Length: 79
View 1: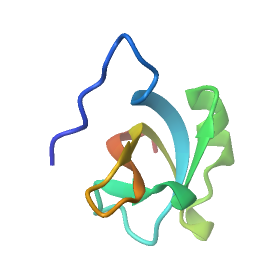
View 2 (view 1 turned 180 degrees about the vertical axis):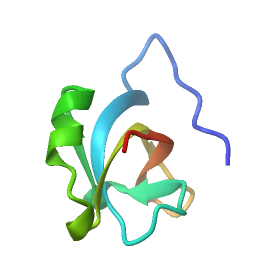
View 3 (view 1 turned 30 degrees about the vertical axis):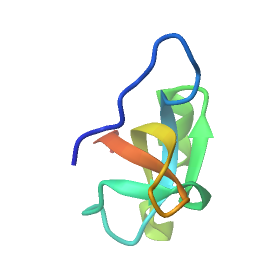
View 4 (view 1 turned 90 degrees about the horizontal axis):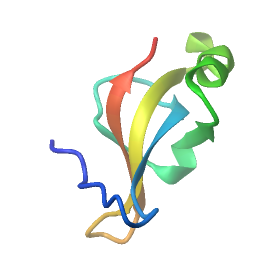
């Protein structure tokens, strides 16, 4: 699944470091209520907790889906 296109002149879609709540790392997009954005990669890695299904990642978003949901797209897992 391709990542949403970033527009350098706006702040609509950006890359972020985040922790994602997900039972499985197989998905490529996540609703905004499952994503917590952090200021940097170290904070995200520190907040991750695999036992609680919280994984550090770099994400792109938020972007509105065709169904009207705000989504973040996985760029890559940090842990």
